[in-house]
Structures are given as structure tokens and as C-alpha cells.
Length: 192
Image 1 (cartoon, one colour):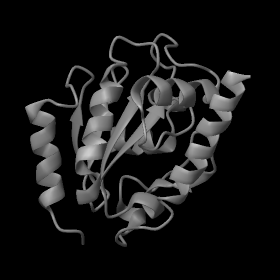
Image 2 (image 1 turned 90 degrees about the horizontal axis):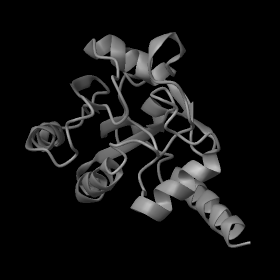
Image 3 (image 1 turned 90 degrees about the vertical axis):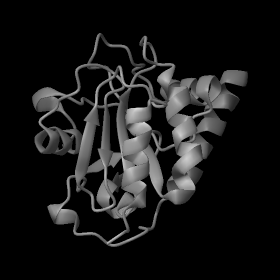
């Protein structure tokens, strides 16, 4: 009974957080961006990443619940809470591409992230992030940076113009000076 109540609460949270991002901060040319891709939100509807988040600085990460890097959820959440008022949005893409380290069930993913790490940044449906089966967004980010995820918690930084700025492999922690410096530089750029 408690598990069902928690899952319902998590599902409602997903729907409410989806509504927080229904309008763009700034119009960008989606067709020429690296983020003109649609993906279904975890426990929610599909959305076009560019139309929803265009004009924001994005940190896009492929995530997993059963990985040695899973504690990075805490750092990603801290980045999101620290910089969201300045225009940063962290986007999480659960994937089982690396040793099947993600739940199959979306409700389990949402519950795990919320209960263990207090994740409030947008999470998307479980999908592939590498190779020919990669979701549309990751295909574009891989093509732009020349870097394919090597494991879970790979990160791509995307500027306000929707163009990939940098790739950070899994070993780069969310609180690393290298990543924070890149995020702050991207946030300092004006929206076009």
C-alpha cells in the first residue's frame, strides 16, 4: 500500500514538474540546434527538448540506478538547485545500455531517484544513448561533439543557443572545478 502511494505521489510530481517547463525562456532556431529532438518524460508526455528548454543552458546526462557512479545524482541535483535560477536545467536520461544498470519500470526509476537523491530535475523515459539505437537527442549530441557515452553519467553541456559546448565523461564529477567553470561560462553568455 505504501509503495503504491509513493508511486502515485512520484507520478503526480512528474506531471507537475512537466508543467513547469512548458514555455521557452527564449526563442532559438531549433532546426539548427543540437537539441531539436523529442523524448517522453519519465511518467509523462513527450516533449521537444528545444521547444521546452531552448534558451537555457542544459547539462544532459545519461543516468542509471545501479551503477558505481549513481551517487552523482546528488551532485547533479545540487548543480540544478544552485544554478537553475540563472538558467541551468539538468536533464537526466535513464539508460540500461551499460551492463543493464537501470530499472525497466519507469515508476521504479522515479521512486528510486526521488527517495534516494531527492531528484527534482527533469528525467526522461528509459532509452538507449549509444550506437544506432540511441535516442534522437543523444545521436545529435554525439554527432556534434564526436563523443559517445562510454558509461553511465556521461555529460554534455549545451549552450543557450542549443549547441553542444562540451562533453564530460563519467569520471568527471558534478562538483568538479572543470565542469563548474564550463557551466558558469555558459550561463554568462546572453540568451540570443
